[in-house]
Every structure is written in structure tokens, then in C-alpha cells.
Length: 377
Length: 240
Image 1 (tube, each protein chain N blue to C red):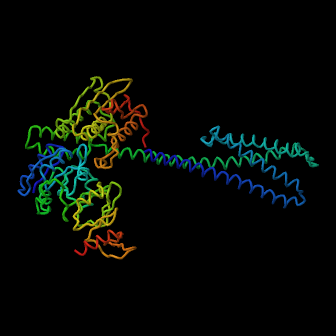
Image 2: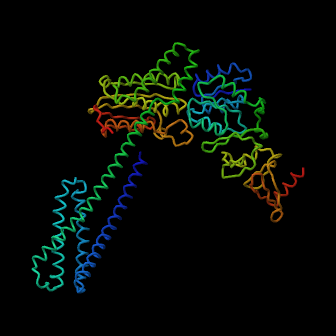
Image 3: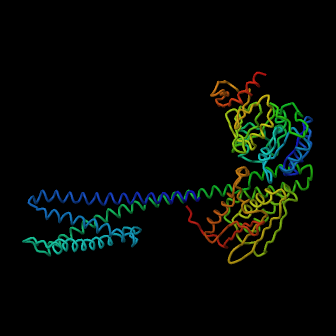
């Protein structure tokens, strides 16, 4: 997950830079083209135009570049990029007119005020300014239209990408939920122990067959349910632990501290099972002397609080030695459980691993009473 | 053949014991629940064959093998379900059994064992030299090998480790070159210089080198330089 997120961050930055480059290119290219067009017009219709008029044209275009460039900041600031076209149209018209006014003031101010140029004869100043203003408005509204047209297109693209990414995430989570079924290593070890037990203790062997059947059935069905009452999950965890006790014998000791008011609280199926499996794997299987594991459930602050403790050190829970990767995942089971919990209950749910004392590791989960509805895709 | 069962589960060991009862060639001399016990049993009982569980608390089966002073016994691995291990076994043509063990599969594995049983010398004060057919266990990443000593062309010192060249692989062995030299038979192996030991059987060409030294080229391409003093010793050995 984190790798994907980092990648998407980097992708976003790369996209942002590409967009910025495109903007600079369009802004410079567009205005240069517009300037050239104007020069051609002047050459054709007014061959006697002097260099002052040409300079005024360049000055006007430069002002246009600046006004649109700095105006663009406000478009982002005011959040216009996220608006629909219905709300956008009047805003574009208004903003275009406002920018055009600024353009006229700056342009005429500089030319006739700053540079003290003479007013052209035979033209009313009002008509000239008004014509310029209308012209400017058309150009600027055109600019804004191109800008927002691109933004709409880009947003559509982005949403599409986002949607695909979300689908991928959900699919991945579903896949991993399927994989969160009982560890095959455990199943085959249990079958092996069972085979030995058939001769040694037929009564216990028959019991173990039933327990393994319960566990497999529950695990296969768990994909279909969002939550189950804690009681059901505890029953299966008990079966599982009974089977592990067949394997590990006196090395596995168990302490249950279940508060009765928690029995009916909802929990994602296989969550507690995953925590317990993890504890057996790293706390019991990894140490020649085994140890005691404890399951503690409490109802608190509007939710269910689960604690599973095992002897060991936290470092041992995520083995660094490559030889141990053969045993299966390195914390993948726990990460899956945390992802599933978040998908189902949102951010109010939590799952973490920490050291209780130097010799005891605890896996803690907090599960709210109500699952939050995730948007279905 | 004397076999040692190594598995952390008592029931798994019992089950294997029951299955092995049908094979008169296999005599179970002991059991071990972890790597530490296995080492003790190995020293005390001198088994020729390990039935070795890959996943064990503490050290894994692979780590146990790596820690053993060569020669290592024959090994049949056992595992319940482990895609990584099974892939490694198949890649390296090591014999393994999947638990619960299929009796027919067990028979096939025992069939494949070399017949010469009890080849291990009794525990001596000083470990005996390795024979040409003795095996050394080496591992690198996912790959592992039981290398016959005669297959080793060249051993190179790398600090406290030794790089072992054989076939087309050169994994590291967790032993110093000096420790290896003590165990190698001087009839077959020669200390060419401070860093390298070569196997006479793998010499391809010998050329005169600077100031009375020799350049020995091994089959497979490696070239090893001998100083004048070592060249002298080398000539004496070769002329024997």
C-alpha cells in the first residue's frame, strides 16, 4: 500500500509539473500568436502605422500576459476549478469584464498618462476606451474559456484515474481478504498431527477432526459476511487453539478473559483469528519453550477493545532474518487485518502491535459498534 | 542406516516413527525437538540420516545444517506447506517429504538414499579429514547445496568466510579458509597462496609465471597464482 501511495504521490507531482509546463507554453505561445496576428492586421490595414503604435501594441500584449497570469492565481484560490459549467459561465463573464477594465486602465494610463502621448484626432476618447474594453473582454473571456475547458477535461481525466485507483484498492483488499483464510501451513501440520493422533488417542482425534472442520467451514464462509458476533469468532478461535494445543502440547498455554457484555458485539470475521494465529506463530512456534497467550475483550468508549498478548519481543514479531520468510508472511496477516478493519469501519477502528512489557507483545484492536458504509464500487 | 528424527512436534515425530517401522533398512537412533538437541544427538549418536523439519522454533532446519561441521549426514527434509522451501528443494534437487507423509513417497525417498551406510568415522578427538564423497552444506539466499568435496574446484578466503567454487556456483561457507584447510585432505587439495586452496583434480593447465612462480588454470576458467616458494612445494607434491 505505502509503495503504491508513494508512487501516486510522485505521479501527482510529475503531473503537476507537466501541467505547469503546458500552461507556460500555451500562455507564451497564445499571446505571441495574438501579437503576430495584430501586427499582420496593422501592416495590412494601416501601412502608415508608426513605431509608437507598434510599441503600444507590444505594451498592451505584455499587460495582457501579466493580467491573465496573475488572475490565474485567484481562479485557483477561489476554487473555480472545481465548479460546474453552470456556475462557471457568469463568473467567467464577470471576471473577464473585470480583467478587461484593469487592462484598459493600465494600458491607457501607461500610454497616455505615463508616456504623455497625444490623443488620436477625430476619435472620441470614450468610444475608443469602450471599444478597447469590449475587445479586451472578448479576448479575456476567450482566454478563460480555453483555461477552464482544459481544467474540466483534466478533472474528468483525474476522476477517471482516481476511480480506477479506488477499484484497484478495493479489489486488492478483497483478494487479501480471501487470503486471510486459515494458514495452509497450519492446516497441513494439523492433518499430520491428526494422523498420529488416530492411533494414539482416537477420542481426541475425532474431536480434532470436528474442530478442524469447524475452522475450515468458518474460514470459507467468512468472505460472505461483513461482521459476526464476537461469540462466534471466539468459538472458532477456541477450536483453532485446541488444534494448536494438539501440535504444541504443553508449549502452548492459554488464558481467556472475556467480558460477557462483549459477546454480541460485531467483529469482522477472522480478525481475532488472525491476531491469535499471529501470536501462535511468533510467540509460541518461534520459541522452544513456548509460553502463555491471553485473549482479553472489553467494551469501552462505544466499541469493542480486543487484546491478544504473547511472550516475545516486538522485533521478533517482524523477523529480519530472511530464513524465516519461508514461514510465510512477515506481518502481512496483521496488515491485512488492519486494512480490512479500516475498509469496514473507517478511521475510528484501529489495530496495532506494541510491547506491553519487555517480554510481552500485545496486539490491540479497537472496533466501533457500527460498521461505516464504504462507497460501493 | 541410523536415522535421527528432527521435528518440534512430538506427534509429528511419532507419526514418522510409525511410518518408518516398515523400513528395516532405517534404524531410528534418536529424536530431537530443536536444533540444539539435534546437535547434541548428532555428536552422541552419529546418525547417517536426518529427517529434518524445515520450520522449527529457534533455528530453522537450514540454519541447523549450515552450522554443522562437515561432513553433513544425508538429509530428507519434511515440511507441512511451504511454497518457498519446496521451490528451493526442487531447484536444488534435495529430497523432501510433505506432511502428512505419503508412505509411497517415503519409500521412494528411502530408495534413493545411497546404500553405503555407516560411513561416518566414529567421533575422534580431532575431526577426521573429509573424504572425497563427503558432503558440505552451503546456502546462499534461496539456493542450497550438498556439495561433494571432490566437486569443489577452488576455495577462496573472504575474511571469516570461505567462497566455495563448484559447478557453476560459488556460495559462501560460514567457516574460515584455515578451518577448511585443516579438514581437507592434502592428497587432493593444495594451499596455493594465503587466499586460495585448489583441488588437484580440477587443474587444467600450468604455466611458468614471474620469478619462478606458477600460474595454475583450473577447469572452469579460474586462474590461481603460486609464488616461488609455493610453486616449489607444488612441484614436489605433483612429482610424488
